[in-house]
Length: 210
Image (cartoon, rainbow, N blue to C red):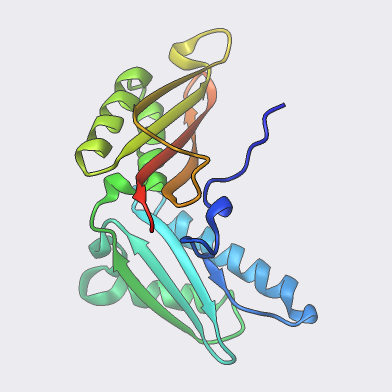
């Protein structure tokens, strides 16, 4: 049997960090956890038409929740004259029990974000782009952006096939067992018309952390 572990959780506290950073007493833990999930769901749903959100980091103190949104298109999130941020902050404050501080950080190279790459491939598959062309071109763009290696895997009824199968492309090296290797990983789903769900997995190797 395969022994599989998420490449990011495998490297926590070595050179990766948690996306939610807080400590809660036992009576508050479940409430705060649900709040975190709802915050992420609201932000993802608001920008689901175009995949721009890389990750959402949440930090809690005694009287403030700091939410940092990492996005490939900061202008889309901020909106004209900051109207988008103000509206988003108002929506988020309805979900939580503390005041919110919202930070927007731009992702300089979205080709090196596994989440953005996976969601981009999923959107292409939903538009009936040939899966081989989609994953091959995306892998080449990621390598051109400076990645040491990339592995992309798609699974499902590819090209309207009767039987589901799994296909992958690997460019460069992706050392999954090396803990000091900086590897970004994410999964996405494509709701392809007529064939159901096609799963997408992306691993991006950015080099070793010393």
